[in-house]
Image (cartoon, rainbow, N blue to C red):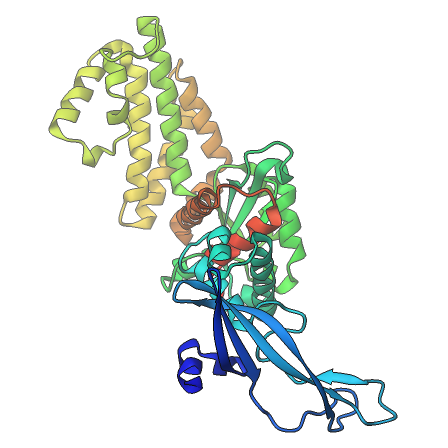
Length: 429
């Protein structure tokens, strides 16, 4: 029966064998003995010890049949007979069972990581499964991720040539570290090379040039030399950080944010014309308001009905500013969608030149867009050469949002960083 029980619970890998079992409420209690490994030698002098007594060590193990499992292991203690040794009493080696002083087995940490990473389970749920407190399970996760990061070491950053940077709000409470924001740093190299998904490299408190600069300067010179491309949104602080800390890298403004910026200017222009022509904000029956979503739709995706609606809107001379801004918006989308990167780059460069030099009076939003694109011209056009998009960074940002909602929020940035690396850091479990 002992062999069957050892096989079912797989206690052999812990270096113990089952001798008895009992129930304690919802917890299954299993009594074990350490597997006999021959004469026990003193860790101080190496001499063979003499049996002294037996003590019991308790350790929480992975659940069995949906119930918490507690191992009560009999551990022999020995007396060192050497008169020159400082050790008087030592215990039999139970390192396979658990770490020194730990109250959970070694495989319990692997179980916690798998539940958190693969099953997207909360700390509270894992704590209920193990029959332990939230703090205990969280401490196990913190120690485990520390071991994973230490095991990977600097090699974790080897081969990182393309990184993505974005801001992320991790807390909505007052006085949160970094004002509740962090800078998300992502490895985009696998995506650019077409060999795998992006992975989270780190989270840094704050959303400023200083936060990004501090992280880059904290890395090794070798890492900074190997970074070739930094993809980002329109925030100028990240561009400043990249050009100062990794001056040889190319900064790329993400296409999504360029199109989103142009779309925001289109919305602002529509709202201004709506106010000027009707004297009120958009209402259900107003032509401009009814077309607000159609105006943001890519030209090639418009239905016949939507095209007819836009034609009716643009037939009104008072709506000409909206039509002009809409045409620029569509031209930007067309440039990014062009199958030939060289042709697309030329098209977008022409758009930037046009709205910088030939914008009619009264199109203030379009003028502002032109100034922004001209200021970031090099970053905007660099996409067509390096094809580095910040889309995977936004995807990881979304996964972090889901993690935060699943955990019902975080109050400690250290815990949030650790959980984020577990979920999105592609660490080898």
